[in-house]
Image (cartoon, rainbow, N blue to C red; front, side, top):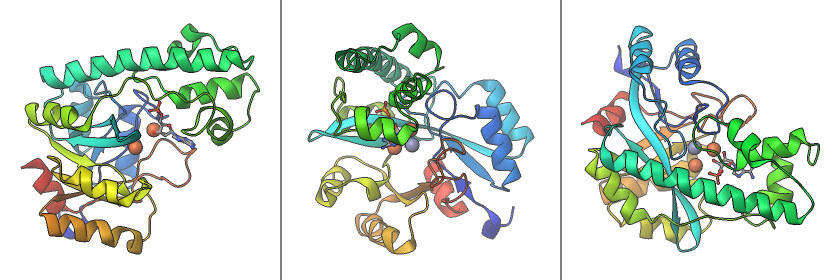
Length: 272
Ligand code: AMP
Ligand code: FE
Ligand code: FE
Ligand code: ZN
């Protein structure tokens, strides 16, 4: 593969969290877009990484790098930490994912209680059955649409379950330092996800000064002038660079697969 043609989209979600495509369908889509590599970065879950998925990726000549997007709390804010190139069967990763399953169970029950307080009844078992891996707010949003309470996912977040909405519950907090330790124990590298979306820019510097390995410089459809500051920060601090679309399915127009990617050099540095 010519280095110039190599594009790897390192941020996307499958049906094991809040994406609409299975890992196999993501690989097929990547192939049709002529991507050379991908990482499937489900929220708090590594269930996508089964041997048959790796086999399918190599049949399709797609380099599949292990990935996951961990939810963390930092100074009362939710921060996403991307992990790459770790052993998905490592005890540390499996244990943290199991902890997130429990955190999400308790949190989802509390969100449903808050909705019940507003007269909106969603059955917990039905919610769980609507998802395969990490169950979260997008699944609750879909249940709200099904019930006719709202007509779009965006409306569900704006009116009921978004970070500043009445039924929002952050859930038990998992800190960034403990998440970084888990990732490093499993042989992986940790990146701050989409710093472009963090409201307090100084917070990003404080996070990067923890034991972070890199910054997700290229993200979704952000224009170059919104990426250059993060590229400069990565260079100044000697950090690795990652990038990806945050593709969840065709329903999110701002995140088509392949709209952000890294080249062969950045990909190889994460693999080393
Ligand atoms: P959770 O991990 O359960 O808190 O859900 C977070 C996910 O919900 C994010 O990864 C997004 O995919 C989605 N999400 C968050 N905010 C919004 C929003 N305002 N509109 C649509 N989707 C959102
Ligand atoms: Fe998501
Ligand atoms: Fe994220
Ligand atoms: Zn994501």
